[in-house]
Image (cartoon, rainbow, N blue to C red):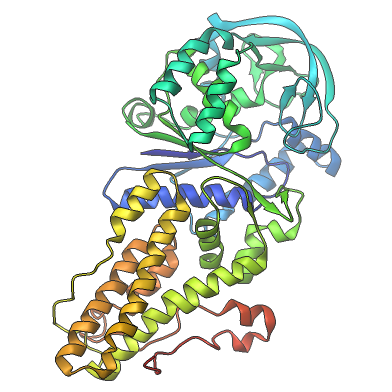
Length: 493
C-alpha cells in the first residue's frame, strides 16, 4: 500500500490538525506492515506557496530561511509523534521534484492554453473563488487578480471523472465526501488556471517550461509530489504496480485531490490513485484549528506536557469519522486517564501483580480460556472503512472485557488450578493487547509487551510498574504525584 498525506504550507509551524493526519496515516502504515504487506508511507511539505513568501516578507527574513526553518519543524514531528514515514519530500529542495513537475506539464501540454483571467483570489487557500468571503474562514479579504495565465482543460475530463467516482475505481471515503465530489462534477467543470505570474509569486516557485514569466500554480506543483518523490524504480513499484494508492487529506482540499489531480493524471496518461480518505477538522472553541491558533494547538507542546500516548490516543479515540472534533486539553487528559491509566495500565498492573503474588511471577502453563472478543478482525474492518475511532474503540473494548474477566473470575479466590487458567487467560489478553495496540500507540504497546514478557527474567515476569502517569494529577498538583492513583494490583478488586 502506498499511503500519502497532504503536504502542508510552511508559512508557520505545524498545528494539531497536521498531527491528526500524520497519526492517521501512521496507523494505516503500521497496521498493514503488521499484516505482512509492503507499505510506503510518504509525507512532506509544500514549500512553493505564495503564503510562504508573504509570511517571510512579514517576518523580514529571506523566503528560503523561513521555508527551511518551518519545514524542519514539520519533519521533526517524526520523533515526538512516533511516526514511521518512509519518505519526506520538500518541494523546494527534493532533487527530482522540479524535473517531475516539468514532465507532467509537458505530458499535459495538449490540454494547456493561455488566456486572460480576472477573479477573486484567497492566498490562504491558494485558489480563486467567485465571491467572498473565503469559505475556509481565512480572514484576509479576497484579492482581485487580473493576469494572463495558463489554463488546463479540466472540462474535457468531466465524464471520465464521473465514471471513476461512480464506478468506485476512485474510492472516496466517507460517503458524504464522495457525494460532495459527484455533485461538484455533475454541476459542470470549468477549465482552471494552472499558473501565476512570476511577479505576483515574487519569483518563488517552479517556472512554467518555456515561459519564465509564469510559475506553475502551487497546487499543480504540490499534487505532483505523490509521483515526483518516487525516484528510480520506486515510481514503477509504488505508482504503476501498486494496487492500493491512498491519499489522506482534510475536507477542505478534497476538490484538488478528487477532481484536479485525477484529471491531470488522465491527461498525462498516468495511473490514478485508488483511494481518497477524508477527515474533517479539529476545532477549538468551535473554530477550526489553524497555524494561528496559538500554543494550545501545538502538537510538540502537547507531547511535552502529556506524552505521545495521550496525544495519539485522543486523536484516534475521539475524532469521529464524520464531523469536526472540538479539542481541549481537559478532554485529552480525561480520555488518557480513563482509557490508558485506569483501563489498560490498571489491567496490566493487576495481572502482573497477581502472577507474582500467586505464581511466583511465572506465567502459568495452563491453556487460556477461549477469548470471546476477536479484536484483530474488528480493527482491520474499521481501518478498511477509514474509521480510526471505531478501530481504537475495538482495542479499548478488549481492555474492558479483560477487566470484566478479572471481576468475574476473581483469581484471588480460586484454587491453584483455577488461578492458573484465569491468569494464563489474562496474560494472553495483555499480550494480545500489546500486538493490537502497536499501530495506535507504538511506545505504549512496547511497554505492555515488556511487562508481560517472561523471557528476559528467566521465566518470570518483571516486577509490576505503572505504565501510564495519571494526567489529572499532573494538571492539578505537583509532579511528585504523577503516579498517584494508579492501581498497583495489590487490591484484589
